Image (cartoon, rainbow, N blue to C red; front, side, top):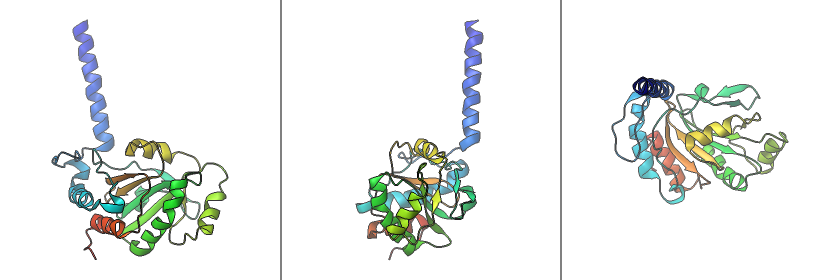
Length: 214
Protein backbone atom coordinates (compact mmCIF):
# COMPACT_ATOMS: atom_id res chain seq x y z
CA UNK A 1 0.00 0.00 0.00
CA UNK A 2 2.84 2.52 0.58
CA UNK A 3 3.74 2.22 -3.10
CA UNK A 4 0.10 2.78 -4.10
CA UNK A 5 -0.19 5.83 -1.80
CA UNK A 6 2.99 7.23 -3.29
CA UNK A 7 1.57 6.91 -6.78
CA UNK A 8 -1.66 8.64 -5.73
CA UNK A 9 0.26 11.49 -4.09
CA UNK A 10 2.42 11.86 -7.17
CA UNK A 11 -0.67 11.97 -9.39
CA UNK A 12 -2.22 14.68 -7.19
CA UNK A 13 0.93 16.80 -7.35
CA UNK A 14 1.06 16.38 -11.11
CA UNK A 15 -2.60 17.38 -11.40
CA UNK A 16 -2.00 20.49 -9.31
CA UNK A 17 0.94 21.37 -11.52
CA UNK A 18 -1.19 21.06 -14.64
CA UNK A 19 -3.94 23.14 -13.03
CA UNK A 20 -1.41 25.87 -12.22
CA UNK A 21 -0.16 25.79 -15.81
CA UNK A 22 -3.71 26.07 -17.14
CA UNK A 23 -4.48 29.00 -14.82
CA UNK A 24 -1.35 31.07 -15.36
CA UNK A 25 0.46 29.55 -18.33
CA UNK A 26 4.23 29.43 -18.23
CA UNK A 27 6.34 32.56 -18.05
CA UNK A 28 9.79 34.05 -17.90
CA UNK A 29 11.56 33.26 -14.66
CA UNK A 30 12.87 36.60 -13.47
CA UNK A 31 16.33 37.34 -12.20
CA UNK A 32 18.20 34.53 -13.94
CA UNK A 33 18.00 35.38 -17.62
CA UNK A 34 15.76 32.39 -18.29
CA UNK A 35 14.19 31.77 -21.67
CA UNK A 36 10.63 33.05 -21.95
CA UNK A 37 7.85 30.75 -23.12
CA UNK A 38 4.07 30.51 -23.00
CA UNK A 39 1.54 33.36 -23.02
CA UNK A 40 3.98 35.92 -21.58
CA UNK A 41 6.92 35.05 -23.84
CA UNK A 42 6.54 38.37 -25.62
CA UNK A 43 6.99 40.29 -22.36
CA UNK A 44 10.74 39.60 -22.20
CA UNK A 45 11.86 42.77 -24.05
CA UNK A 46 9.61 45.01 -21.93
CA UNK A 47 10.86 43.36 -18.74
CA UNK A 48 14.45 44.04 -19.78
CA UNK A 49 13.70 47.67 -20.68
CA UNK A 50 11.87 48.28 -17.40
CA UNK A 51 14.61 46.66 -15.36
CA UNK A 52 17.25 48.85 -17.05
CA UNK A 53 15.18 52.03 -16.49
CA UNK A 54 14.36 51.36 -12.82
CA UNK A 55 16.68 53.90 -11.25
CA UNK A 56 16.61 57.07 -9.19
CA UNK A 57 13.09 57.99 -8.06
CA UNK A 58 11.70 54.68 -9.37
CA UNK A 59 14.57 52.39 -8.39
CA UNK A 60 12.12 50.38 -6.30
CA UNK A 61 10.44 48.95 -9.40
CA UNK A 62 11.13 45.24 -9.14
CA UNK A 63 11.32 42.56 -11.81
CA UNK A 64 8.68 39.92 -10.97
CA UNK A 65 10.07 36.55 -9.94
CA UNK A 66 7.91 34.96 -12.60
CA UNK A 67 6.42 36.89 -15.51
CA UNK A 68 2.78 35.86 -15.79
CA UNK A 69 -0.64 37.26 -16.55
CA UNK A 70 -2.12 39.55 -13.95
CA UNK A 71 -5.34 38.14 -12.44
CA UNK A 72 -8.43 39.50 -14.19
CA UNK A 73 -9.60 41.63 -11.28
CA UNK A 74 -13.00 43.30 -11.53
CA UNK A 75 -13.87 46.72 -10.11
CA UNK A 76 -16.05 49.77 -10.71
CA UNK A 77 -15.38 52.24 -13.50
CA UNK A 78 -15.84 56.03 -13.37
CA UNK A 79 -19.52 55.62 -14.26
CA UNK A 80 -20.08 53.10 -11.46
CA UNK A 81 -20.48 50.21 -13.91
CA UNK A 82 -18.47 47.00 -13.62
CA UNK A 83 -15.21 46.81 -15.53
CA UNK A 84 -12.01 44.75 -15.35
CA UNK A 85 -8.40 44.63 -16.42
CA UNK A 86 -9.41 42.33 -19.28
CA UNK A 87 -11.54 45.18 -20.66
CA UNK A 88 -8.38 47.32 -20.81
CA UNK A 89 -6.20 44.74 -22.54
CA UNK A 90 -4.16 46.08 -25.42
CA UNK A 91 -2.73 49.04 -23.50
CA UNK A 92 0.18 49.25 -21.08
CA UNK A 93 -1.26 49.91 -17.63
CA UNK A 94 0.20 51.23 -14.41
CA UNK A 95 -2.26 49.73 -11.91
CA UNK A 96 -2.07 51.37 -8.49
CA UNK A 97 -4.05 50.41 -5.38
CA UNK A 98 -4.68 53.22 -2.90
CA UNK A 99 -6.89 54.15 0.04
CA UNK A 100 -7.76 57.35 1.87
CA UNK A 101 -6.50 55.81 5.13
CA UNK A 102 -3.08 55.22 3.54
CA UNK A 103 -0.88 58.33 3.91
CA UNK A 104 1.83 57.23 1.41
CA UNK A 105 -0.92 56.45 -1.12
CA UNK A 106 -2.31 59.96 -0.90
CA UNK A 107 1.17 61.47 -1.00
CA UNK A 108 1.96 59.87 -4.38
CA UNK A 109 -1.44 60.50 -5.98
CA UNK A 110 -0.53 63.93 -7.42
CA UNK A 111 2.52 62.38 -9.14
CA UNK A 112 0.36 59.62 -10.62
CA UNK A 113 -2.05 62.30 -11.81
CA UNK A 114 0.77 64.24 -13.49
CA UNK A 115 2.07 61.03 -15.08
CA UNK A 116 -1.35 60.36 -16.59
CA UNK A 117 -1.50 63.94 -17.82
CA UNK A 118 1.94 63.69 -19.40
CA UNK A 119 1.88 60.22 -20.98
CA UNK A 120 -1.73 59.03 -20.89
CA UNK A 121 -2.81 57.98 -24.37
CA UNK A 122 -4.44 55.16 -26.31
CA UNK A 123 -1.50 52.90 -25.47
CA UNK A 124 -1.05 53.85 -21.78
CA UNK A 125 -3.18 54.61 -18.73
CA UNK A 126 -2.65 55.00 -15.01
CA UNK A 127 -5.39 52.89 -13.40
CA UNK A 128 -5.58 53.99 -9.77
CA UNK A 129 -8.08 51.75 -7.95
CA UNK A 130 -9.40 52.94 -4.61
CA UNK A 131 -9.86 50.10 -2.11
CA UNK A 132 -11.84 51.90 0.60
CA UNK A 133 -14.78 49.79 1.79
CA UNK A 134 -16.34 52.38 4.16
CA UNK A 135 -17.44 56.00 3.76
CA UNK A 136 -17.53 55.54 0.01
CA UNK A 137 -18.19 59.21 -0.69
CA UNK A 138 -14.83 60.12 0.86
CA UNK A 139 -12.41 58.96 -1.89
CA UNK A 140 -13.92 61.02 -4.77
CA UNK A 141 -14.24 64.01 -2.46
CA UNK A 142 -10.59 63.71 -1.47
CA UNK A 143 -9.48 63.49 -5.10
CA UNK A 144 -11.39 66.66 -5.90
CA UNK A 145 -9.94 68.49 -2.90
CA UNK A 146 -6.43 67.34 -3.85
CA UNK A 147 -6.85 68.71 -7.38
CA UNK A 148 -6.57 65.31 -9.06
CA UNK A 149 -7.92 65.94 -12.54
CA UNK A 150 -6.33 63.49 -14.99
CA UNK A 151 -7.00 60.17 -13.26
CA UNK A 152 -10.27 58.34 -13.83
CA UNK A 153 -11.91 57.19 -10.60
CA UNK A 154 -11.81 53.40 -10.28
CA UNK A 155 -12.92 51.71 -7.07
CA UNK A 156 -13.46 48.35 -5.41
CA UNK A 157 -15.92 48.96 -2.57
CA UNK A 158 -16.45 45.21 -2.20
CA UNK A 159 -12.87 44.66 -1.05
CA UNK A 160 -12.10 41.84 -3.51
CA UNK A 161 -9.20 43.37 -5.43
CA UNK A 162 -6.74 44.07 -2.62
CA UNK A 163 -6.05 40.48 -1.45
CA UNK A 164 -5.76 39.22 -5.03
CA UNK A 165 -3.24 41.89 -5.98
CA UNK A 166 -1.31 41.51 -2.72
CA UNK A 167 -0.94 37.81 -3.45
CA UNK A 168 0.05 38.38 -7.08
CA UNK A 169 2.55 41.13 -6.21
CA UNK A 170 3.76 39.36 -3.06
CA UNK A 171 3.24 42.50 -0.98
CA UNK A 172 1.17 42.93 2.17
CA UNK A 173 1.14 46.72 2.26
CA UNK A 174 -0.11 49.77 0.39
CA UNK A 175 0.42 51.36 -2.01
CA UNK A 176 1.05 48.58 -4.52
CA UNK A 177 1.68 49.36 -8.18
CA UNK A 178 1.91 46.89 -11.06
CA UNK A 179 3.21 47.70 -14.53
CA UNK A 180 1.30 45.54 -17.02
CA UNK A 181 1.96 45.23 -20.75
CA UNK A 182 -0.64 45.17 -23.49
CA UNK A 183 -0.90 41.39 -23.34
CA UNK A 184 -1.81 41.48 -19.65
CA UNK A 185 1.57 40.33 -18.33
CA UNK A 186 3.07 41.93 -15.22
CA UNK A 187 6.47 43.36 -16.16
CA UNK A 188 7.23 45.26 -12.95
CA UNK A 189 6.03 45.70 -9.36
CA UNK A 190 6.52 48.68 -7.04
CA UNK A 191 5.98 48.03 -3.34
CA UNK A 192 5.51 51.46 -1.80
CA UNK A 193 5.23 55.00 -3.10
CA UNK A 194 7.30 56.61 -5.85
CA UNK A 195 7.70 59.96 -7.59
CA UNK A 196 6.02 58.81 -10.78
CA UNK A 197 6.10 62.14 -12.62
CA UNK A 198 9.81 62.68 -12.08
CA UNK A 199 12.17 62.42 -15.07
CA UNK A 200 13.04 58.92 -13.82
CA UNK A 201 9.35 57.96 -13.66
CA UNK A 202 8.61 59.29 -17.13
CA UNK A 203 11.66 57.49 -18.52
CA UNK A 204 10.51 54.22 -16.92
CA UNK A 205 7.09 54.38 -18.57
CA UNK A 206 8.55 55.39 -21.92
CA UNK A 207 10.89 52.41 -21.67
CA UNK A 208 7.97 50.08 -20.93
CA UNK A 209 6.16 51.44 -23.98
CA UNK A 210 9.23 51.23 -26.17
CA UNK A 211 9.03 54.97 -26.79
CA UNK A 212 12.25 56.91 -27.39
CA UNK A 213 13.66 58.79 -24.41
CA UNK A 214 13.26 62.57 -24.48
